[in-house]
Length: 323
Image (cartoon, rainbow, N blue to C red; front, side):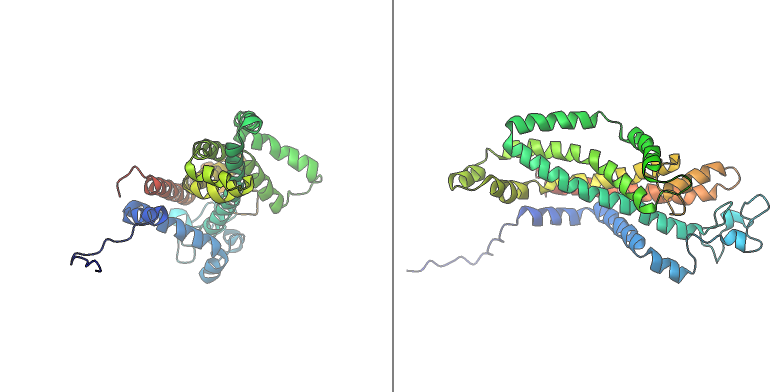
């Protein structure tokens, strides 16, 4: 005789780890607000040409020098608040008179391009090396540890400071300006060359614990290749630390790129850059403090939002935190 079910409600099917993490993240109001700010910044950066076209200004034209009554004889904005007006929402740059709002948008585009490109290379390199070395162990693990320790001993900022004149001397002729693509490539390569190490070391430790689990032993027992075990068995189980590392690495690269431009070895003119805007603002701070406020607040808001997003992602992926 068929079994009759009771009138009580049926149990909901169990959720997977990804669905559980997404549900926990959606309940985190701080994380959702941070995600909204990050997405807003990314959309603004991607749509910078469209936004500035609608705004009616660009980031390179010298409005203060070409228009009358915008800059004083000393090169300072005439209007209060750094030249804020209906035509220039955030004012104009002292000296050259470029529009600050347009510069901020394109400066955001510069920072995010360097950060996202670097993080993409870091993620691919760190995941492949960390997972592979963690599974192989032995000689590969010892060689990997040695290389990581050597790379961790290099001060990245000082290396970039030293490489900049070398690149200019080696690849750029006398009297020529370094092409923008070369500046971007140099920054991305150096950030990537050193940024993959922490991620790879974390994944190596995680995989060394996972390789003795039953599902890996079962794959070995049925004759699965090492490539299959690494790509199909181990890799899907380490995505959580990868996501956390990415969300925390982006703001670090943004601030490092701004610091390099502030020191004069990042992205050069005429490409707009937040760090160079702050450097220029520090020179005229006492006469026009407003010019430093806008890029400083922009970096603060973006980095804070990304750090809060990273914390929220980490909490959502932590199985020890109650859902």
